[in-house]
Amino acid sequence: MKKNRDLYKYMIGGTLIIFISFMALIGFFAPEKSFSEMENRRLQKKPEFSMKKLFEGNYTSSYEKYVSDQFPFRNFFIGVKSDCERIAGKIENNEVYLGKDGYLFEKFKTPQRKEFEKKIDAINSFAVSNPNVDKYFMLVPNSVKILEDKLPKFAPVDDELELIRSVQKSLDKDIDFVDVYDTLLSKNHEYIYYKTDHHWTTKGAFYAYEKFCENVGITPHNEGYFDINEVTCDFYGSLYSKSGFRRLSPDSIQLYIPKTKKELEVEYFDEGKIGDTLYDFNSLNKKDKYTIFLGGNHPLIKISSNVNEKKLLIVKDSYANSLIPFLTDHFGQIYVVDLRYFDEDLSSLIEKENIGDVLILFNVKTFFEDDSIRKISW
Image (cartoon, rainbow, N blue to C red; front, top):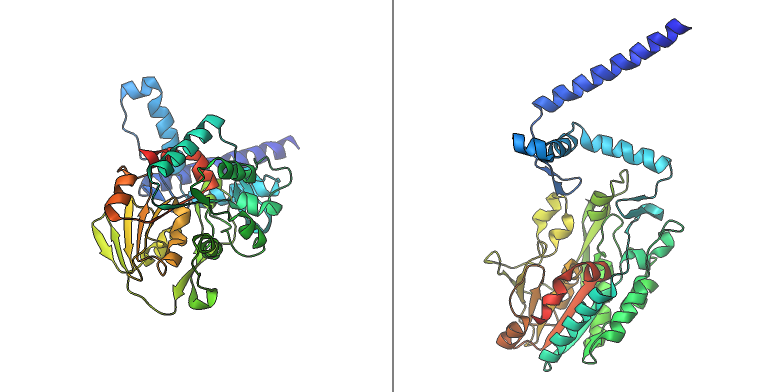
């Protein structure tokens, strides 16, 4: 009996040594990777050795991360780990919840009151400084609120609706609040949020477009006006990358293309590039396929359709990217500003270009976690 136990131990130990040696050999000859498409992040490069880094502890910590990031078959083992955790009943990883029907939800926490007030003060100051333009504010709830029936039971998330209402009450009287909460809630049985990404889908953006038109007093196009094309059914988004949960079904991305084609001029000031489309189809070959809309985020974009003389400024985060195409039939010129990358004075831009309407559009999580909106009144 003892001989059998000893033999079993030797077999396990020998197998482990062979496995480690095999993986080390593969790791030695495998080329170093700089970026993980699956995790959508840069990987740790091999750190340069120095005695100073060694004694300070920087070298060993960097090397450990390097070994972890460059481990052979990393994606396979991440998938195995994810499967084991799901079997064990784990429903949260890196502040992302695994909900019903394969939906991933990002945890939301109520911001500190001081930070909340600073952002509202900046927006209200902007409103006061620009009395001659029509101003609209759209604060979009995330899937964690609209689809909360799909959240795991007792998942500790704060109430986004309470904060949306607080923002609405705190805004200057000259800012028209575009309330899309009830609209999206009434459509929560439809595919209005991606399962593996933090954005709303094009259908979700379409319903918000209808609501915005109602506030502005213009007639929106109905869905029959568009050819609705599925351009990919293999989209794994930001929450998939962040959470580590694997073996999930991918999302699909749809584009609403007007059946009657109109000429557009799209100018990207950061790249000095002018195009004729709102879509970057090369993005479908990348991990972050949501960047098909406008090629992602840019400091300043000018979209000219010449349908009329109306000019709209959109101050936004990436949620606006899939809504903007719907507005090109209603505004002759649309200026798109992302304050995370734009450092010029907005009031000067409004005055210089004689802009008559301003839409501020953010999703709740980005609005409360990113400080860039405070630049609106600089």
